[in-house]
Image 1 (tube, rainbow, N blue to C red):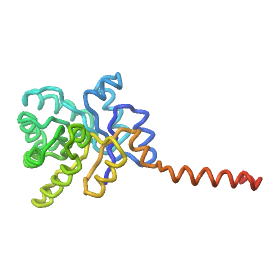
Image 2 (image 1 turned 90 degrees about the vertical axis):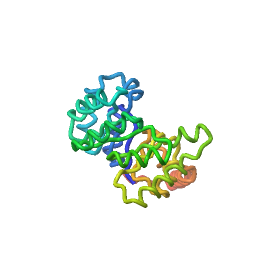
Image 3 (image 1 turned 90 degrees about the horizontal axis):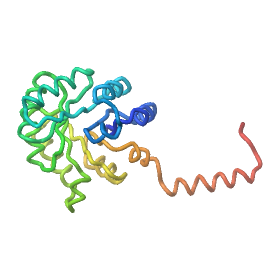
Image 4 (image 1 turned 120 degrees about the vertical axis):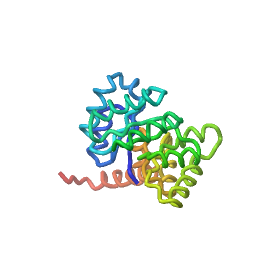
Length: 217
């Protein structure tokens, strides 16, 4: 399973990339706002750090304008995935841009039917929002599993990019179900290394080592 990091913070991306923990990056207008930087400038810098797909989102709502914005974003670097919402205009945009050879990430997916038509429109990635479904007492992981079944039934090449990942358990469940990609904030990815028994074991080892009075260096 590939790891994308969901942020526009360059330092966090660079740190995780240096450890081999980043296969791609996802951004959105909210993350660009949080970064405080110009979208074209920060996206170009991110693309120079990470060779994998970097999702940059259009903000128009009509297909003609989405297509124009998508082309401008795609011109930033060859590894841009143009991110479009799962609306009818977004699907029109997906069809045009994917037909022109650009990667397209169709986002804000909340149903199997939405995932199905996005795949038929040529989406490179479909982004089901796990956490937001959990927020309204629906099972986000059930959606991931259902999309996996449908895509496998018909050999769709669209990759399932599980988004709105809030916890390390979400990551585990996505891996077990067979999501192609997860995108998560840097703190969630870092939390994958944590376990209370690891901390407890290390603490005991250090206490015992101190008792030996030895040094390695």
